[in-house]
Image (tube, rainbow, N blue to C red; front, side, top):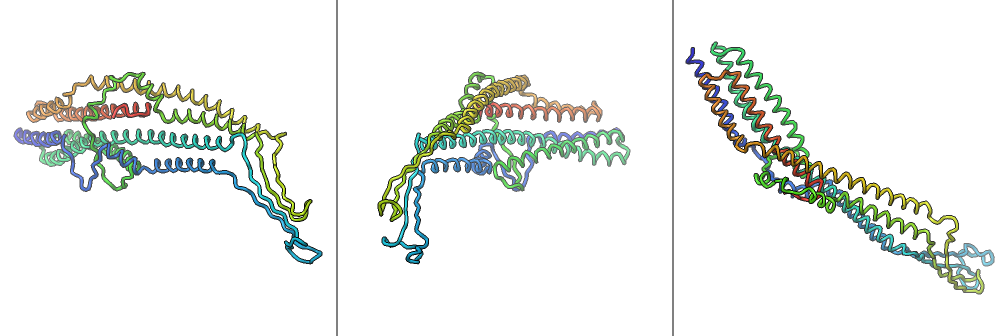
Amino acid sequence: MISNLVKIYTLCAGLLLQGASLRAGTPIVTDTLHLTLPQAEKQFLESNLQLISQHYQTDQAKTDIITARLFDNPEFSFENQLYNPQTKRFFETSKTNGQYQASISQLIKLAGKRNKNIQLAQTGVKLAEYEYFDLLRTLRYKLRTDFYKTYYDQQSAKLYARQIASLEQLTNVSEQQLKSGNIAVKDVIRIKSLLYSLQSEFNALQNGIADTESELKIMTGINAEAVIQLIMDPAAEQTYQPQQTVYIHLLDSAMVNRADLKLSQTGISYAEQNLRLQKANAVPDVAVSLVYDLKSSYPDNYTGLGIHVPLPLFNRNQGEIKKAKIAIDAGKNQLKQQQLTLENEVFNSYSAALRTEKLYTGIDKSFSTDFDKLITEVIKNFKNRNLSLLEFMDFYESYKAATLQMNALRYQRMDDKEEINYVTGSQIFN
């Protein structure tokens, strides 16, 4: 009986040790797309539909410059008598009995309206460009954080897959030994309980991975059915050292590079230029016309030069001028609010990064290796019956929890790094 139990424990330990020893292994997936972060960013810049749509908005804004540079078309008018009752003829045009009148006029804009419209349109292009860059900043942050999230979740998924495979084999062996009366029912129940728990957690993790992978595929234009395996450069974790960066430098970078801040600043310039334009619109334009009349004026074959000028007695564009002034005040207030928000975002992101880094650097870098050695020793003790199955499973659960927590911490570091890049509007950390 004792010999049988030793064989069972030896088999169980072998199966679980096999699962633990495969930690560095990568499951082979047919037709898998291996994707690094630089490759993902390259596809993102080339294929992201939101960026392409926003680029079209910039192109549309540039056409406003073309429109603003165009001069008003001249106007031509012609009038001919419909019916001459004396000659009983329609559309009489002869110099003896006919009558017609023709004129051509040209509107001349005063007070520099044309140049002011051109300047306003050029500022509108800058607004569209800053909207594009701000969208690029936001989407790039989302892309990179999703990449890191998916990568570390995939590493955790490998751990689950190895443990589930080991426990499934252990469950099958245990059920067979239970029928032979070589193992207690409570031990089988304990193994199954742990297996079901792992399967449930693994399923939830896979659903989360599928969601973030879907976002990655949408942002990079990858087909929905593609299987992607993310690859990360180990140097990305090693070169990231936020404690060597000074907060004031991050704040200065944000003030200079944040596209949304430039958007607000340019919005104020746009409102100021619009105010100048609206004041110019209060100045009436002049229409100059050249008129020819065959007979209805004195003398016959009359040629005249006309000027048309509206008198600004009532409408002096007061409403649009006031609206433009309000837009300037609103823009300045929004800029102050945005600067305050920016300062808090940079400070909070930097502080969070330092806290995470302090936690990470406080962990022994040999922790993972030591834990692998420790579980090997535990398996040996389990084999020698110095540990019960319950104690062994509890330790195995601790092994899983420690590995998942380490993956979560490693992801948090990369997420903090990307948030600093996001709030500063620049690639402080690659």
